[in-house]
Image 1 (tube, rainbow, N blue to C red):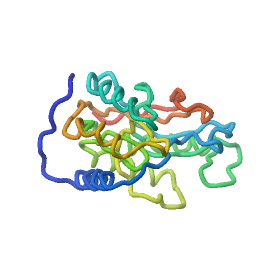
Image 2: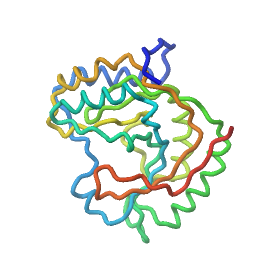
Image 3: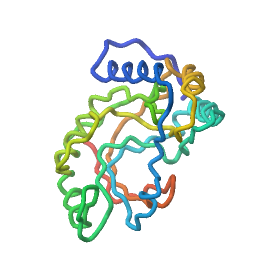
Image 4: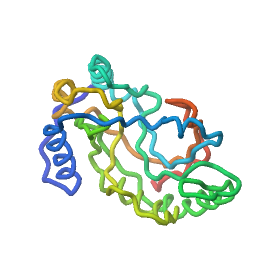
Length: 234
């Protein structure tokens, strides 16, 4: 399905948040390096675990391809491959036998989390979301999530189960990252690339399952290996 112009909707909590993000980016004088694969990250020998919603990138064509090619023309932008696109619900940590610091989780605790997530996730009705318009944080280009309230409710359930002892620095904002800046990109050039998609819905799809994945931190865009799949209700 090709993209379509966004239909105006009553402002929601997330619609206002997305607008604030875009307004802030319009005022930005520089971009930040948003690449996750730092030297410290790549040096970890253990796999990393996270809970996600996979994004069916093929359903976002042709607009996704057009946006990716336009972003690739901007110096300092690293575009994510289509097969890597996802919405993060909850980061879980590096898999280590004996966790000793924040951001680590044991295999036994990961299994416990997966089992504990079955009831709250499987009793959540499946729901539709849309992806788009395009937007940008200081460090990354992303697609907004229409229907983000349902995604956020899933995040809240999983966050409680993960029992993260320290609250995150920023409130959860559902999004699908499509590119990162490396810190050298010009905000003006990035804005020019993104603006044609500021009123574009790329596609809609139904969220029918949540997936726990593990991946190799040594790679910039590793395969997201399935650890567990939990279907939603209906």
